[in-house]
Each structure stands twice: as structure tokens, then as C-alpha cells.
Image (cartoon, rainbow, N blue to C red):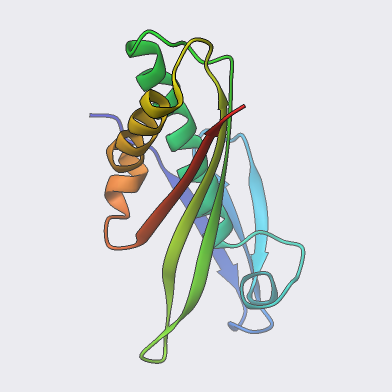
Length: 141
């Protein structure tokens, strides 16, 4: 079993304080604040990091699925739009929209759509987020 980790620290109260999130590999350390999560401050936030994890997981999984089907990809770009809102007065992730563009020579559009959709439900991050509505708009370029 593989174990990955990340760490977050926070100093101060919720509205005026601030935090730092670090990944275990040491590749990055990013600040986050109340304003970056609920307003438009430039630091990161949990939803953005969740979107990054989902987009990267889906992209890598799609590359593998296309290769196994005999259509190695030349290029895949995925954006994850994470929608946050309130449900019964509590902040929740409402929906994640995956937008994907891929170049995989020789594949027919119908085959690509089948593989892309199967990958949406099969990637580990999608599976972990099964309680959230996940949509996919995938297209060949």
C-alpha cells in the first residue's frame, strides 16, 4: 500500500489568521487564508488543491486507459472546476466539472468518449469523491 501525506498549519483565528499547506514530498508549500477560500485573495485554498488532485489523477488515468486501448495519447489537459456552496447552512463541495482536451491519434470519437467516461468513474480521486456530482466534458483535439 502506498501512503502519501500533506500537512497544514494555521495560526490565529479563522477570519484574520492564516495557514500553510505542505506536501510530504517537499515539492511545494503554499499559504492559505479565510479570504482565499471564501473571497478572492490570491493564496490557495482546499478546493483548489482538491481540483488539482482530481485533474492530475484523471489526466494520468486517461493516459493509461488510452494506451491500454492501443491509442497512446500525445497530449491531455484537464481542468477541474470545483463548485462550493451551502447546503443546510453548511459549506459543501457541490459539484466538480472536469473539462478535458486530448490528442490520441487513430481513436474514433465514440471510442474516446467511452474511455473518457469510464476513466471518470475509475480514477482513484473520482472514486474517493463519489458523494459529489462529477461531470465530464471531454473532447479530442
